[in-house]
Structures are given as structure tokens and as C-alpha cells.
Length: 106
Image 1: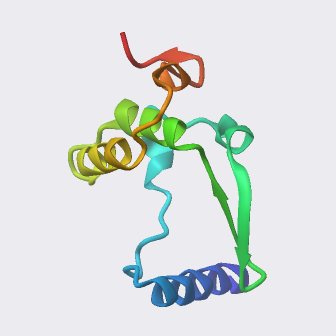
Image 2: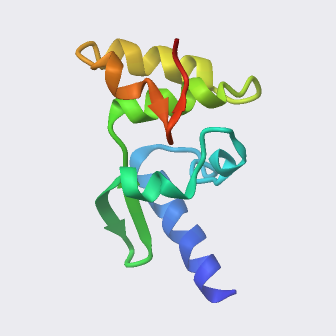
């Protein structure tokens, strides 16, 4: 499929520009407990690359909540959780008590 190839090419180009591995863009998150189609509602448009790759971002609290909820042992979720906490010292803990309406923290 031509559009799929264009997306892969754009992802590789962005990865090369920012020093990311070629597999930096993936959809593994869709297989976690923290994924919901509502993710789009909680994200905001960031940027478009090569007229094909649209990047959306979430607030650090939301990203932390999804990482805590999924906590995949085969991924880097634990190091990501630590990194988010270290980088975002002023997070509001109440902002990530729920992910998609499901409590994640007691």
C-alpha cells in the first residue's frame, strides 16, 4: 500500500533527524489496558511531518498514568515512568488518578 510506505518513510526520516531508532513509531500501546479510542480526545495536535505523519501529544500526567496502567515488563515502561517523574517535578497527582475513567492509583 502506497500510503503505508509513505508513512514508514516519513517515520524513518523523522527518526533519522532526531536520532531515533527506525522502529520508534509503533502501535504497541493499542494492546495495553491503558489504551482507549478516547486517547485522541485527550491529546493535542503537535506537528505534521512530510505531509503524512501527524503527531499528537498528551500531557505528562496522562502519559504517566498510561505507563502506570500498562506497566509492560517487556518494554521500557518502568524507566519511562521514572523519567517522567524526574522531568515533571510539578505534576498534579490528582490529574492522573484516572485513566479513561478507571482508577489507577489508590
